[in-house]
Length: 549
View (cartoon, rainbow, N blue to C red):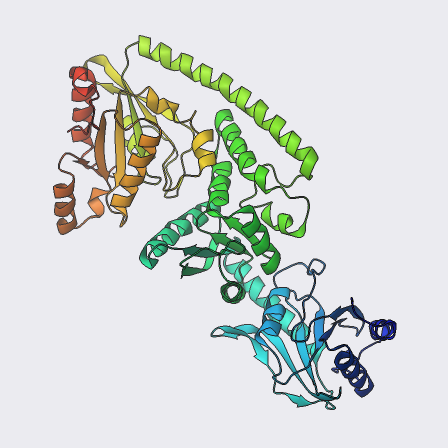
């Protein structure tokens, strides 16, 4: 409002108090008044009008644009519009701009109307746009033909209500078909597109494990990451179009978003925005069973949430709760920062106690002289299935990522009353979040006491080599890379002869099995008996990683 005369401020106040027709653009007197005032101040003027014709906000923009300030929370549900239309002036010809359409899209306005004003302050024409329930191509909106300024007929309310009815019907159809939350998957990075696509495939599996339905996906390769929104605003608008088409209420980004990016994206899209780390944390929160596992999940969530506490605002509401937000939730900034620190200290103390108990158990087992073989590998490689097959147990084994979180041990008895301990551990994954690496170090301590690591890999996976590399990297970070280990290529039954021959050449010392049907498991048992019971001295670690055959 700076630079405006008292008479102009008074005129704006009168506009605010005007009642506009519900099913017309304006009255001719209102059009003349708005146009004359806009030209007098030399700026675009905007009015946000509800469905009863009441002005909810008067906006004073610049000469060539208008900035809509933060609005109250939209009406609940993705099938609802905001119940407001924007009527604003344009001081140059051209009609509805791309910026106008983006405002309508992001704010879910009933309609946007641009009134063109000539140099002497007279109205010339108006043009309107509204969203579509069935977006065609990349345009989820309809752009009306420009109309003479004095043709005021319109059907704003009827059109908006019909649109909401159609959106509600589609939402109901989607819920009947699949009642799980729907999410858009997004990858923005500098890597080649083929790598981004593969990473999104894995993110899709993570989403399925978390209980999400993938509504669509977007891949953008960039030279440099946008620090504010990770991508340009135009690309965000494209993403919003895809979200509308897929009826997605959530956006899941591959990689980790900064606190600023999380809040900015949630604020501009008015959708829930989470990143890969949040998704993994949510999966862990769903699957943790033991006391130690639950504490470790909570600690990881608190460590992730702590730097992202910026006070109670709309964006935070869309960051917490439900998928990606199980656990601590939103807090009141300063007080709860202190509470989080205190809670983290209590969790660490309890985890230390549990760690000492596990250490005592391992020491007792060591005194008994029972060898320990620990299963490691990429998540969903088949470790739990193998444990069940070898020990005839019933450990949870699902075709989902991170089905196993808590360490599970079973005894495996050989002839002559000899036995070993088999331990199933949490699956590894590429770019394991630091919060999880630190918090789950206690869970993976079982590996440090192992006499042998059994590296189980999914031989049928298209990214087999990358998955093996990710496991080796994590083992190195935990200083376990020099421990004796045996490579096991699982799901061998799913490969054709040429693929089998290629992998046999690449991994000549690996054992090939099918944990599901038992193929190759007898040879594996013989190898374990040989290594752990007959010739344990042969497994002394050397200066290089030991891969046994």
